[in-house]
Length: 279
Image (tube, rainbow, N blue to C red):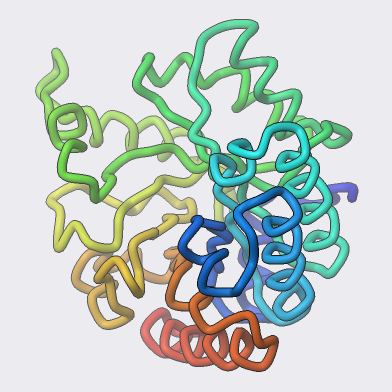
């Protein structure tokens, strides 16, 4: 699929058309069990394609978690590759949640795999880690700009270990999270509309003093089963709430394997997020 417009523009248009919901595709073993599927590559394929078939034409964004595909080796990665193609062919956007982060040619290799237009795992956006320094992301930034893809950079995650790094102070007195947000704000500064370089901000962090207005999307995992609610998004994101990409996994996936069950769960969540985010 050719990216004729930058990711931020495509994201805004798709969310306007389909609603803001992002469905996380996280094939945990317990979800495969709940669907009556074996914990094998074949079970993974049945699970993943069941989600794709039910939701690809009605949900704006999908976020497959790469780890749950990688654990089955090449067979699992092949499922991720095919699912990504099928989702994008149906008009949905795909954020591969791989949290890649490295330096130099290694980061360039990740970028070529996930962000290049003809890469083997080409997606619309990739999650990346900035903790080798924001500048280490440059190869991914360059590839994303070239192909029209996007990045979501870890900034304020909701895991309890996160503040050890994210609230630490840099030499100029800002927090590490603040420095990441400043870097993203600079990347999106000249964009008319929504920028293509976003932040990952957990929906369960309660609140933050950081400035989340980065003129880019804010991927908000942790909704549904992890405790975040549609109503809490306003508290966390404030005036930047319109740019939130609300991501829910188990709340939706747990309604399967019935296609109508998945569709009803996705529609309920999407309607709730539409109301709060102003769609």
